[in-house]
Length: 193
Image (cartoon, rainbow, N blue to C red; front, side, top):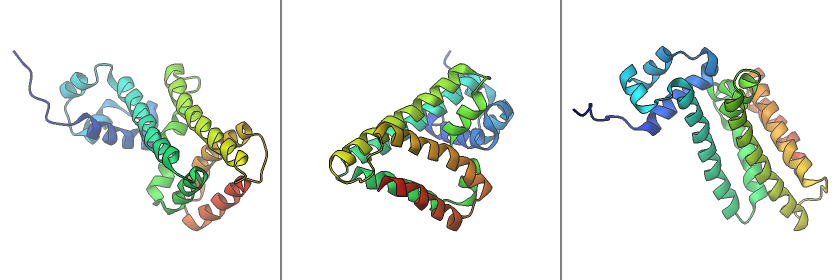
């Protein structure tokens, strides 16, 4: 006998679950929190995510990797990829207070999962390192093409942008004020001139 037909889309479930994980973190999020947010029963949950909460969280990380891949495609297709990256950072100052307070799921995961779950930590670190590699490649090309005057090693500058991202996601919680954040972003981006 076949089970009930699936009446929801996994992508929508992932997005709903991500919001809970953003707000509460992995450890503090209960199955009840997820079922309520996703508006499904436990049977449907375990039919869709056989590995339970950990599989769901891992897939949420993967979804963020896919979002990065979309951004990378935009960067790769641009005639001015360094400007696309700068504009991304500048756009953060247009976020609402809730977005500032939730920060970045990947950064949150690295912080929360260190010493807790090595596999989830490594998945999140891998995403950040992929972003760092993209930054490094864009910076190296901008330096080679004479677009950037700063000749600091591209790897150091790529890592700098990741450091900025990680720190920014704490700072935006301290100061969820777009005027303050805009000034901070511009100061940090000045190193890329």
